[in-house]
Each structure stands twice: as C-alpha cells, then as structure tokens.
Length: 141
Image (tube, rainbow, N blue to C red):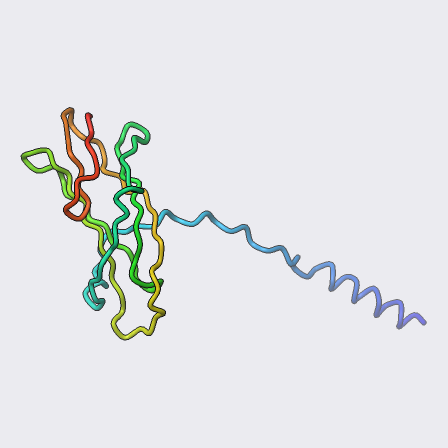
C-alpha cells in the first residue's frame, strides 16, 4: 500500500513539473512587401491586370497612397510594385507586374488582388499618378 501511495505521489509530482501545453501567441504578420527581390531573376515576369475603376488615390497619415485593385493571372503569381519618383512633369509612375516560377504547375484562373501602395511624402505641388501607363488620378500636395 505504501508503495502505491509513493508511486502515485511521484506521478503527481512529475505531472506538476511538466511544461504547460499553452499555444504560443502568434505575432502579427508583417506587412507584405511588393518590392522586386533579387530572387526574382529566376522567375518569369508576367502581367498584372489593373482594375482602373477600383483603383484610387488616398491620403494616409500625411502621405499619399494608391489603393490598387486588379488581378494576377494565376494564384501562383506573386505581385511586384515599383514606384518611381516624380518626373520633371510631376508624373508619378507605379509599375505593377507579377512573377512566377516557370517550373511550377498552377491552376490557370485569375486571382483577385488588392493592396495599398504608399507613394511617400511629396514636395508641395500638383502631380498625376500613373499605373502601368494609365492615369488614375491627380494629387495636390
């Protein structure tokens, strides 16, 4: 009987010392970066289909941004965005395209895409914003 009690006490003590099975708190996901990457050299450049009617210019925290809507050719395509500084005519050009691994098999179905692309702080002036060669709006900074 004494051995049974001792064995039960040891089991209880061992269980009490075991780490609790508490799931880790997930950290917030970082904001996606759509900037080109050096690894893109191994990928095939592809289209980005712009939804001009769904794309607009917004002002966020004293900076301007483009709420960009469009679609990618497949769910496997990864979006890339390049924002050029204003040219001498105060045109801001945003280039939107996608990249894909040419060796990857992927369903051929259009994938909707939305993102907010920051244009940054702009000097005072009047600007036009272009996405893939299409004017989407004007800014008075």
